[in-house]
Length: 214
Image: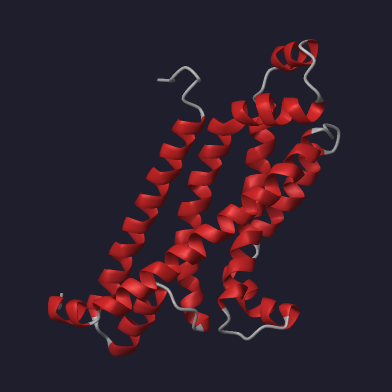
């Protein structure tokens, strides 16, 4: 392990860490914003809900490298444009979170909904003030999976030249130099843990009025 190399390259490594964070977080945020209304719509179609959710789930089976290569001609972007990574990971995040949103809304009891209706809540009020807050713990669990998965998948984008911590892996393999590889692995793990803790904290803050489990 060459600590002198790490110190000399610290600015570059920090920049890659920031890019990795951006490419991992932004798609999850966009995916969640898209998944909430879509999940709500699917939730109200019980007869076909399972089929639709499984269909969206197929998006998650598309190999990430193939998607990174396929998107530039479809989006008319350059192969090195980070937007390709953002779009690809948004697709994965959306596919994962649609099921999570549906499961979260399913966890709200019928009695709770009936009580809300009896109190005069309109559909939109019931969704934003009753259903969605009660679904937060389940959605939070899905978000934890999504952010950690994205941290891992982003590294694959190094093969198409997108700047992030995966670039340290390719550099290490090209130079037969172990230090950047170890640094990339360590920082990826640290980033995944930090984002996971952030989601856990946010979930607890948004659902702190609920009784604690366990």
